[in-house]
Image (cartoon, rainbow, N blue to C red; front, side, top):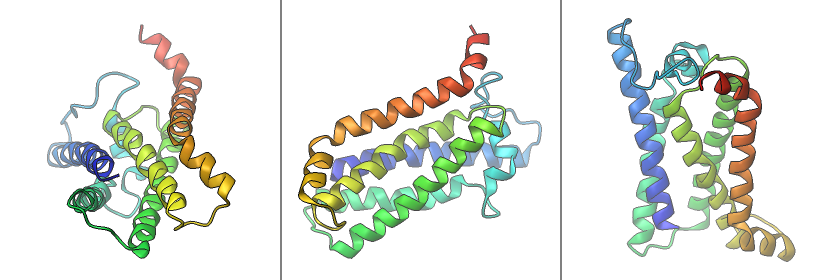
Length: 186
């Protein structure tokens, strides 16, 4: 679990930092074309300029810049051999659940309200899915979240399969909604 948290936290932090840098460059120069603006479909400028890009009154990537170091630090502490208490795992899962809720909202708005998809945002989406899922599995496995023995065995034994299904569902959603636009790019 330690390496998983370090790697996924680093990926999420990199995506958040890249997006934050682009946002600040755009604030400094309104004519700045972000490096993540590649074509009509892949353009983070639309996401950054939307009200959804600053839900709490500041750019959303700052949430990732604040939260992902906690995930990375937790992973490092685990790799050092520490055993964290139940309350910590539940707090981390609570924060990750809030983050995943935000990600689902942002994916939804990207699909249906914003005309383009943000590549750096998608890096964070794809890091958050396993980060959330493996924390849920860990909490069930350790008994931090109540579950019957059958549910526990099914979740733990099939954790990778369920994650793969989640990724397939996310990619299918993107292709169903944005497929016609994707086809025009080829």
